[in-house]
Length: 294
Image (cartoon, rainbow, N blue to C red; front, top):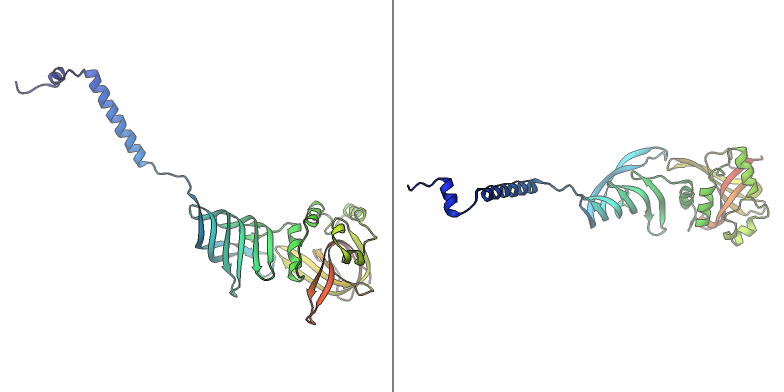
């Protein structure tokens, strides 16, 4: 008969039935494996480094009051690490403010916003910057980072020494003193022999020691808000017309013309541009205890 049954084909070809079954199962398994592999989509994030990538970042920043956060958008260029095209890791973002002044942020990013440690530089000539902790795009400084930042608004070439930053971070309860225990600790850390002449000569040996001044006259007093904090700036002179500038975290009942005593931590011997187009030399200090006397 011209027709051959499967059994006769197998007999003529000498292929055992068990081997045919195994071969069919192997082909079926290969087909299923290939089909599954081809339908699988990779979910691994893509990490890379980009240069001058144009993008718009949505984040938070302090509003005009200095006490509340508001939503903002900044368009600029980004160079640094990205994950799936979004800034993550370290990088630099260059942009401009509404007045057209260029500024940049250099530091850590998380999900497309400033997050972690970084620096915003706003004036290339003076190198005025906000260095420290960022959260969701906004500068949220620690106490020592705040003290490192606000004197730059007035003083020329001000830099907070690392020694001062460490001391402030270790004694935050002294700035200002708000309990009897804090007052006693401040007194124990005070050297009454330190005065203007010692600090004007060299502030470096005294950056971990408080000093006192009595019968100072407040020449100018400003209360400002920044980065969620209120702080007071007091420009004062002693009887010899040596000038001090004190930064006090919070509000204090001192006004222009008042006489007061102060216990403070020296920060720097610096200067600022005055209204006579000259410079006034000052000892800058962080106030711990300020008491009005007249």
